[in-house]
Image 1 (tube, helix red, strand yellow):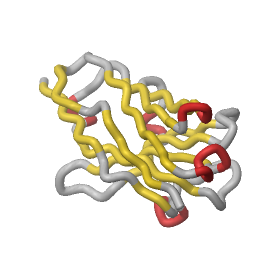
Image 2: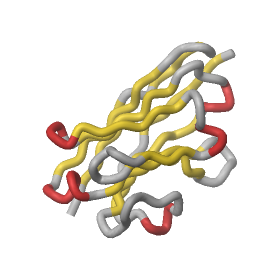
Image 3: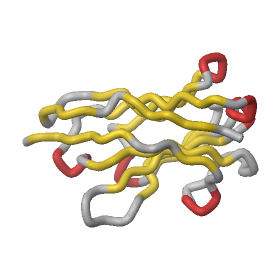
Amino acid sequence: QLQLVESGGGLVQAGASLRLSCVASGRAFSSSSMGWFRQAPGKEREFVAAISWSGGGTFYADSSKGRFTISRDNAKNTVYLQIDSLKPEDTAVYFCAAAPKIRPYTIHDREYDYWGQGTQVTVSS
């Protein structure tokens, strides 16, 4: 069982950076692949980035490459999403998710077993 809590969102101007955090409670975190998704108003939830249990492997959606960086610290039970050069189209609720059964990672939200409540990111132009 895992519980995930995201933080770090907020209202920022275009061009700013944010680092989102997702803290997990539960022993399965260090053996779980993790992912970040986002959902903009009126749109479906979309995959952003994923990371393997060790942190040695990462994968990004095409739209995330270059400005988004996923990382994790297993000693702190935390996964991060660094977003640079924020754009108004990045406005969304950002969710972290855990997929304990998947190696090395997955882009499919149906394969994630645990989800956080989300953190709102709003980018003004």
